[in-house]
Amino acid sequence: MTSLASDQAALGALPEWNLADLYPGMDSAEYASDLTRAATDCAAFAEKWRGKLAAAAGAPDASAQLFQAVQDYEAIEDRLGRIMSYAGLIYSGDTTDATRAKFYGDAQEKITNASSDLLFFTLELNRIEDALVEKALNTAPLSHYRPWIEDVRREKPYQLEDRIEQLFHEKSVTGRGAWNRLFDETIASLRFKIDGQELSLEPTLNLMQDKKQETRKAASEALAATLKDNLRSFALITNTLSKDKEISDRWRGFQDIADSRHLSNRVEREVVDALVSAVQDAHPRLSHRYYKLKAKWFGVEQLNHWDRNAPLPNVPTKTYGWDEARDTVLGAYGAFAPKMSDIARRFFDERWIDAPVRPGKAPGAFAHPTVPSAHPYVLVNYQGKPRDVMTLAHELGHGVHQVLAAPNGALMSQTPLTLAETASVFGEMLTFRALLKQTSEKEERRAMLAAKVEDMLNTVVRQIAFYSFERKVHTERRNGELTAEKLCELWMSVQADSLGPAIKLGPGYETFWAYIPHFVHSPFYVYAYAFGDCLVNSLYGVYQNAEAGFVEKYFALLSAGGTKHHSELLAPFGLDARDPGFWQIGLKMIEGLISELEAMEG
Image (tube, rainbow, N blue to C red):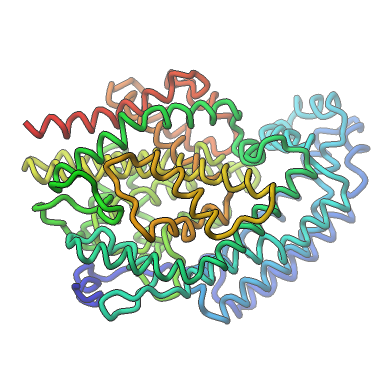
């Protein structure tokens, strides 16, 4: 196995982010001052507005009074968000460091305590009569906040009495928040023994894409062995969080186990159900068909599960240095729109990216929007694989989206998850198409097409399988605790159907649910990936048809942030996710790429 040191050297200098744009340091006077001011401002806001919103709504100048209240609230939210963004990013840099863990935990506790004084605001806002709210919203300046207030009022049927809401809020630190932190620190501390080396999760997962089958197998077996040794902990975390969610859902009156996620995503349950059904019906045309083709390339009837994402045989796997990866993504973005490239370039020039793999660093990748008064940051674990370039393109897409949406302010810049993956997946597609255009050699082109199909299957088919797994877990949990063995059984029940008969799910694979962070941090988040991929495939089809004004419409979609429903944002492109046929557009694009691969067999 190639040494990690030499692999890292081939990548060139990898950037680490500069968090000083948020605060100069953990012990800085600026951070301490903001922490103190946050508590003071929250208390002052409560003193000024608690119990007075109904009267303000009935006053002759209701629009102005309520506008002032929301504006004050937004300013506080921006400061609270800055503090927690900084603490979270510091912590993600090394979740095994005791000093960082304490810093994050203390910040979480203090901000939770301070923000308890803000809980009354949305609760009281929702008690105001509809007619009074509508009258005030029809008049400036409050009309500016209409999207946010309408979103808040969608929560009205599920809100509880003030004291219960406060209890839920304050206990989140010792409840869901604590279990999330336990998961993060456990995952970061795990070590996987491969060929005499002890690796963390990210390098281990990376080896499952190695060109050598024995290396992939060794990585898979090491992953399975260590996860198996820790299954009791992961089962306890999963059981506790699932029960915690069931309690909250029951008290709030949500009917379906995923309805709270649908509400926060501003997407109708029937739209998600239609997506899930369309993807599951397409398994034979997509994953089953592709993996049968890939098995043929490897000269076998079935691929072992550790070969599912293996590079194609007899095709050199290119390593992309950091500079080449940067130029590739920026070039693809710039060919679409110079504005998109200009925004993304700032992430490199101004050190908004943390790229190296480090012990204790949070695994995976993310783009954190922080707050509108600052800017986003991107975390990747860059190791030079083609998929790492796509991940960089993906997260920078998020970053561009977050920069464009920021002018909407702290309350309206956040995009619902169903649309949050739009810019990221579109950025990936642009980068893929740019690389494919430069490739004329048949085997290299085949490898690129295959890698893209695999990414799409991982984004669509695999994520819907994840969603199905979560549904089974949360449903079964209502009947009592689930053993680790039962969780493994539920995992395997969805994996076999989604991947198909050409993938052999051998011993050890049953444990792989344990390292997926979305199940812990954001229950039912995963369908947003499939939603975004299918949506982007449809959008890209419109783009390929050279529709006039596409770029302008696309930037308008991204700039809207959380101010518009998905139906309103897609209408200018002639798309409607509520149309049952909508999902077939995106799925057919994946089918088309598989057909292209099959045609290359001749």
